[in-house]
Length: 357
Image (cartoon, rainbow, N blue to C red; front, side):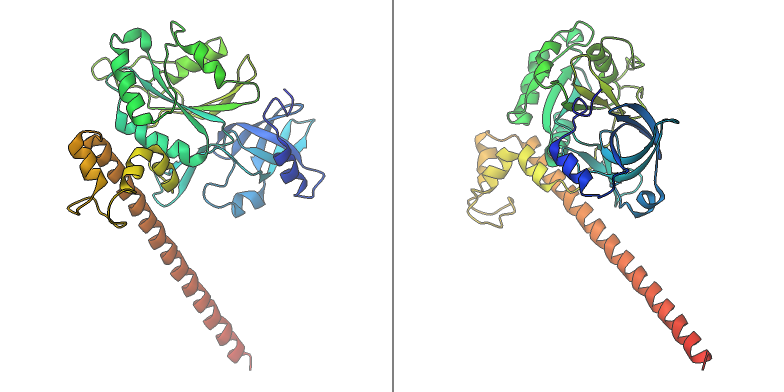
């Protein structure tokens, strides 16, 4: 594949030129496992590792991920590469890192669209859709909701109506990877050199969907548990695939947790209806509790706003505020630790100075 077919742009070329190093070449991360990377370049595939400087200087969430464009030093004979810098991103998926509550985790980068996959069974959850849409909108990609396993559902219209009610104009498609129903509609997003990521819980059919779009059994699949429609983890790493039509697809492991990370704007977009109502309240600082002239309370009373949706909005708002406080506390703690280290070092230097006299 050529660089253009991989999604290379003029903006990325300018960023690479700005590094002022003729020994660097562009490459796109197609897979990542810890600090080992598989790269796609204009002349084939390379295995790569981080340079020492990039490993130690990159901040949380800044290390290369699948979909990233990087500047690398290539060794054509051994098909080895050293990743020197990560080029500017657009269209990212970022969540709160599960094991480190005060750090972000970038799941994929340089996305044009994100397919949010949820199955037409007991796994379906409008609240989870709202949360995921806030994250996708915040990252700058186009969200698309896919209702999978259409062939196993006899009441798909009811699910679709619920999905459309919380998606506010976001495209919603009912699909079946097994029968092929609805897949033709996805061609509008799967255009040459465009990158699309799939996210969703385990068992919603992402791997089966990938296999259908690739035209072969590339991804291992497993059946869901019949007792509760819960899925089993099949995909364990994020990986970039080239589809027959020229689009690029990133599959991701199933995620039960999608913690919000700095997604205030995305939340406002995902809940644009609630935000618009709140802006009409009589008082700018309305808490939507007992204040007179509250537009949200009026909408609830009139039945034009579902209590569950408003509760979800407030819950996600509180979650964001909590995470912001945690980050502020962490930053203050790290600042104090740094000041203590500087103070101890200064005392040591003064002791050495006076001992030398």
